[in-house]
Image 1: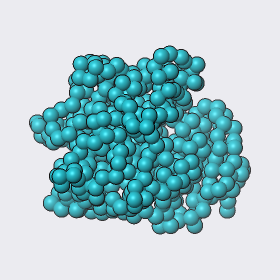
Image 2 (image 1 turned 90 degrees about the vertical axis):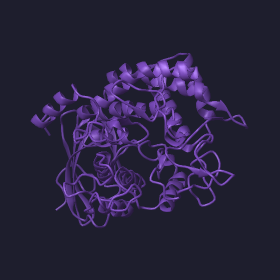
Image 3 (image 1 turned 90 degrees about the horizontal axis):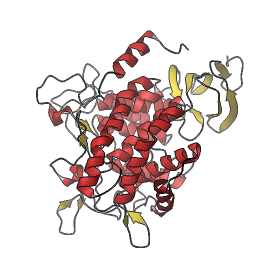
Image 4 (image 1 turned 120 degrees about the vertical axis):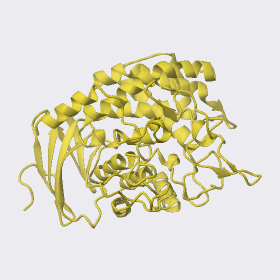
Amino acid sequence: MPSTSPTTARCSAAATSSWPATLQGIWNEEVQPPWSSNYTLNINAEMNYWPAETTALPECHEPLLRFVERLTVTGAVTARERYGCGGWVAHHNSDAWGWSAPIEGEAKWSNWPLAGAWLCHHLVEHAAFTGDEEFLRRVWPVLLGAAEFCLDWLVEEPGGTLGTSPSTSPENEFTAPDGAPAAVSTSSAMDLTLVRGLFGHCLDAGARFGLEGAVLDRIAAAAPRLPPLRTGSQGQVLEWGEELDEVDPHHRHVSHLVGAYPLALVTPTTTPDLAAAVQRSLDLRGDRATGWSLAWKICLRARLRDGEAADRLVRAMLTLSSDEETDYVGAGAGVYANLFGAHPPFQMDGNFGSTAGIAEMLLQSHAGELDLLPALPRAWPDGRVRGLRARGGVGVDLVWAGGRLREVVLHPGRDVDVVVRRDDLRVPMSLRAGRPLRLDGALRAGEADA
């Protein structure tokens, strides 16, 4: 596998001189585009970059990573002047000037100050996939600043736990006691999950680099006091701090499931009960969705190793649609004739998100293993894929037939010890940079299965 192709080189050159992709990317013909073609940070901007690392295009991730670093400058001002907090903060919307304050609008989307915590996950993922420790050292102040804001934002809850108040779950609503729709409550699942994930990243990096300091000490003290995800009367993940009736039980956002994907705080292996609750939440929410929402559900089903459900959603995504048929909640979901994801008005995140979901069906590495074909559906009995990438900087090519793995070729970008998994078979291996390793369907080095 060549380290740099002409296409990659061109992509890298463009990436280092560009801004992150907006909702419409370069496919926008209007002077005042929908949502100003800004960066919507409660899902859409992040989703645009979900496939960057798994499909071996880390250089295409760079515009977003640099943007996060720049956002800390305005974000520190907003944290101090708006909230009296340390560190830096960002909300649901930003732009090329680094807007970090809430914008005017409904609380269910504008009142959400946890974008910084989510964006920091991208920095950590880039380091994990590339193995670039120096990058992680460089962005350490970014992570620590986001965590400092979260520490100051957390409040004491009854019983000694920590929570967030006020709190929303983008962009869902519940029914208030007076019967009216409401959005503001306390300690949404998304808030606490993003904070927990950020605190974990900071503690892991601090231990790796032998770092110390007052903020790290505060993180270590606060992390155990974050309450775990809660489940409700139907076996679902609770979206808010208590069980509340959703105004729309089939709402397009699945913010409360962020811990399963893109974070990996919930997995079928490490937290089977919570994984079952995520599965139940998806069942209750339903498949019907459009664009980016459909893509997020593909990623979640794949992460849960549910290949049949993921395939069902992929097929829905690839259904031919048109502008006249499509709405926000899923009517006319699919793709237009040019294969752009159907969404009114057009957004490109559905294309990127579904690409990430398909990659997740074929290769996962979030649990410390190279997990091969973890969500392969019966409808894909034969196939091959080249150029996927796992955490640790390992390129992966796969061949399968009759629903069984036949061959895998690993392309390590650096010396790394890995555990390769196929179903219940796990084999530890030591890989050497630049020395591809070919394995057969039983994960034995040598010739592939006949």
